[in-house]
Length: 510
Image (cartoon, rainbow, N blue to C red):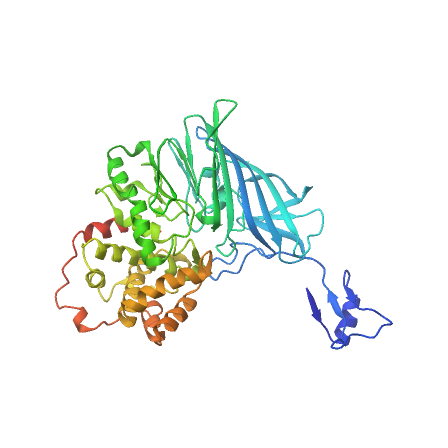
């Protein structure tokens, strides 16, 4: 960093250890000079990115471009050993920097040199390189580690789910801490190589495509490899380890489709397959609304009966808990999680306060699918959802645009969030609304966005001032009033299948 100081301050600065004044004594200064500049000593990278909800998530001082995560896992003991190689660029002169991680670390090397390590806070691994890191320098950070993720707790909680036949590294917003060191915030996306050695007969599914077939290893083991070449937020990287039936196909756009079904599903298996096997169809339909599908592969994972109780939009291949199939096939959850491939995965939140940009949009995609399938128009679904929450319900006190760190997955973020989008559609008209959605994913694809940026885009395309609409539906407590024509004295008729849809939704679709 360089900054200009007054002569008095510069003189004081000369007495500070490690401060060097730049200049050329005895030569005339170029025009515009007149004060010396100061080269500051390297500083520690920030232990967080300052997210308004989770200020210590992520780290400052560097930007990651790639993670190579090489693991060995034993389902019988839940022991995970690994070496993660991180390719990054320093964004400042660094004396040290942090990684977000929880397992025991054996060693860290930075550009080949052994680095010092310490822990701080709940999940901070502090790395002190043997040599100073300068701004713009390319970094190769190699971390060797081991541990039992299911027994590594934060306040009694682990983001790692151990199952009878393996494990699931699937969670939001905390997931990476339990299986690879990272800069854990959606602002720092990277590409991934994930390879995992497991006992032969155990399958491993992760993001993207398989660059090679599973490889036999000594000791009756097999190494599975996966690669994603699109920028990926750390919480969207995942692993599913266990007994799976893997089904491959090709989508209408020519991309590989990889679906996997836990052997433990039993009677739930047919419903899971009748839903997830429609992924390519659903992605094709969503591409016509949201813009071209942003990633290199498609698919889904039906997790085991003793696994997770939610679904998550893990990039290129969502993971679904078994509860979504208990009432039969459920394409709505497939629509929801694949809508996130655009809204949440390609365009990620700039901060977790903006979670409406993920969940409100994926929920509204379900309403559009209902309309497409002839199971209730979006207006009918709006009316039914609006009437489902009495005016005195706590539901109306949660602000979808700023729900708070402890309520980022509250029902209001999903349902009132979808209602807000429907009101936007009514205000701007279908032509503008269905121009806004793909414009958002095109302008912010593979990056990040805020609610304020989305509002500005909607105003630019529609030509309308929308501050009152956004304030009312996203940032004001209480049940908004709607036009009398949109409400009846009696509760609106329920669209076909909507009770089933909502009950499945209550399992928590992230």
